[in-house]
Length: 270
Length: 280
Image (cartoon, rainbow over all chains, first blue to last red; front, side):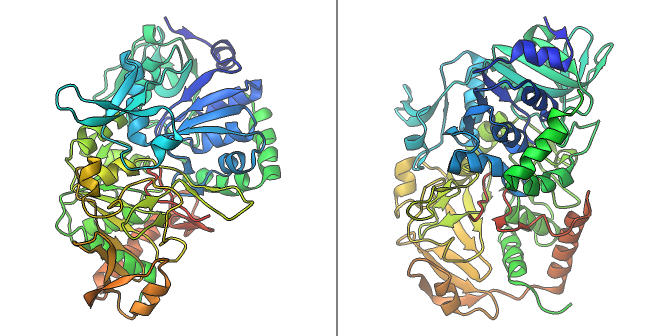
């Protein structure tokens, strides 16, 4: 049953050194506040999983907390490079970063398999690309009915999945809507689930198209208004595109990044 | 405002290529600009699908990212990402996939993963695959839009992220790729199309005022030309007016900073799709 906790307590209780952590949200509902709490607590040696590492993982990688990245597209959407990610991959700064890379379709199916209790997912994908040689969680499987060869991708079962949602009720039932990404699959694939929400309400009103995660599938809920900024929460906030653009200059330079981290995260009050 | 830029020639021609298309899977950046221009000019009924899960988006301004709320708010339907890739893309429901590229070879194979930067230097890291490998595999056909330069049009890819025509005719079938693959590569100099006999890209059309020599010089392999190389029609006043209005509206949103949507320093616009690459 989900416990309603402070962000600090929830992160300390659920996320540990060496864990495999998925912070999902496909350009929408990205759990930035939770990531910043991980940085403040210095939780390290993480394997981070996410389809689009985005600025959120650029920050965690630059902070030196990440050992390995599992992903499918590592850029700053609409802006350009993730410079901390590139610096880690190309120069090993501030520490070497192991990468396991897939396509979006592959990652999505890995979460689906994880949520479904299957050892692997199956798709038409990867054929002819260089990815299978680079990534050992891609293989092939033969259809027992048609004989056709298809791509197989290993299931993803993170130790912890962290997502941001619009609302939870007092019992810890979670409701999210708008672009749904892979949050439902990532949450159901994980051993522990931490959800930050814009607000905790007395009871959830049904909304067309919303995903509901029942309280018994969630480990902890923390109320963190604006917890997705500079990403956004449909119905509550708008994507702060200016901050995504500004990140390019901040992240390009190691010293500028370090100063940003100190001012905006380590000294930040939560 | 007379004349036009080479980027405008590229975008206008990319939009025209969508004239008879019903559904288009759109990457952010140049493809998104072209697809949104097409909806305002040659094909008002064009259905845009973005990999963030929006079907039938009708944005009033150019989105910066594929996750902009505008795409969801104006969509016919919003679906989860696994559904987008499995039910909609993989099942073959989408007519055209529109991709960018960091590197492209003579058979329109695409690299958006890593580039070699010479001895003693680490490989340059690009965003990676995103949705592109399966878009290239499963859409009915693929259009590629990319600026023409020897750094992008290379003899040999440093990595194969997405398959175009493989190493020649028959490769797509052998690999089990069900779409027809790249039908055109639209650049700021002209349009390349695969020769049906060899699946090799040949120069089919040039934009007004561009010479075949310019296109050859900007291509890292020995670029062959079609028997008759056509000239693309000059952009109309309406096309240019619409494109400029679209870009102006996209550039002034939020911070009021200008010009950041299409180019930022040395990077090509890179969407979450991974469908566009960036230069290193």
